[in-house]
Length: 229
Image (tube, rainbow, N blue to C red):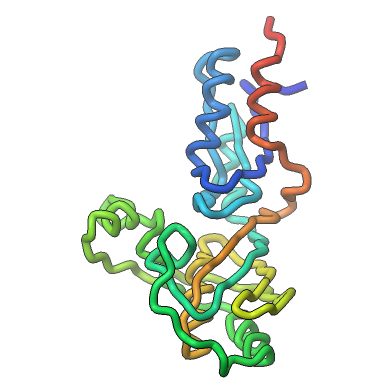
């Protein structure tokens, strides 16, 4: 039995093209109707074009959000070689197509290993990082040139799971704050070419696994059907 007021940690499988805020809102309004104004928040933003694990906390469990956000993340996804986009993913159209005829599978495998370890990474300009109190993506969408500062991240594992050029499928385990979109973009540069993130799914946050997650519509319906006293 749920106890949303005292606090619950809920695992959601975020659908494609939903923002993390969309998911919170989808659950917040049935919770508000049933239990009044209770706290609710998410532990770690997922981009709209990504799917997978989103951890939602309610009530007193919202105090654990920062702790959950600090944990390592595991992602699976696909990189497209031979084109790039302004957003580094499929939110923007592909531009600057280049031939990848010279790129071998061994070069792809070797390239992935160069990312493993600690490194400085530049977040995309189309990202939620704040610059002078404003989100970088808001400035970028307004055609305002922004300078995004690098951040220290750690890539613990970068496994290439399948190569079907121009598609490169992968699994990555990384530290908090890592942008997989930037990894895809930099992957192309290291191969003296261009690339963007074709798809992304968050599989794990620490010990939380998307295999245990609810569909957001399913959970919202369950909340609506709860009996209250």
